[in-house]
Length: 140
Image: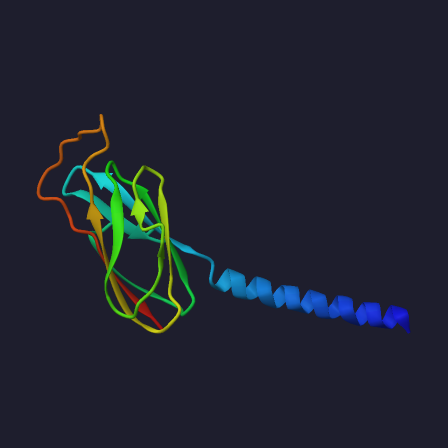
């Protein structure tokens, strides 16, 4: 009888682990990468897509987006519209710095970055006016 209880408990544990693994992989964080470029200074890309100044993306509720700053200047992620959300570590003030954003509910969320000055010793010339990075996230 004791072996049967252990077998049932082990089976229940295995099924629970599989369910949690499926949910976790469905909501694995996507990445938005900020980069430096010669024309208009900086752009960003979602999930290895094309680099643009303005992005519009769709994600599921409870999705997480990780922002990585690979630009030659700091960026601060700001929410400018939509339902209130929490930005963890919004100041990406060095190369490789990351911010994290979670979407607890459905809606249309709007963000932009506020760029700072080039890091010391990295004064790179660019062509044209600097882009203002804008992001619209539609959570379904």
